[in-house]
Length: 240
Image (cartoon, rainbow, N blue to C red; front, side):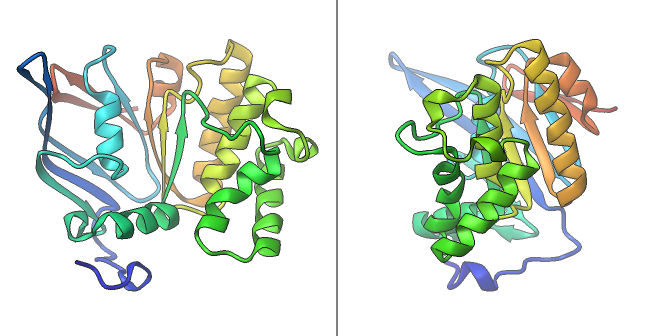
């Protein structure tokens, strides 16, 4: 068990994130279904990576495991060489808050809160003083282009604006890794293209790594590297 998440620096020359021999299965009507089989994947600092494949093939499960939202049945997940199996659930929650940002197809914003309040939440949960969290959230809303919507409740924003707020929320703690699951799956082409460009700009400007699960070939082609899952196995690794 790790004593203090803030003091764990890991091996600075190690990959940012490394999945080693990851396997995951689920029981369905008395039958065991193996969703992931011995997956090995390395994410380097600052790179962009797309995970592609057919629906229901295990892409989101892999992303959830990479983000420590689920634990694998077998295998290891290393962050800068540190085995995340050493963390208990409370420590993993703290680790995610400090090191990872998440954006999903369904933005999971709180409808009763304003855009600003939603963007502030991870910082407040992380113990950041409210006035400082507010300033940082405003900076992030400006960075993603919705600073003028800061006082609007979520149900008064368009789909593209909601996803931009979700991005601001994901970035407020300046994570090392942003994980995005079909981030433009519910958007029209115009808004999708805007989010695609914004993801790459944020990757470049903040120096964070980006892992995206997507069915969108245009978004996948924009990443540095693409991996494909077929029947639970990682079968290709392509460089753009």
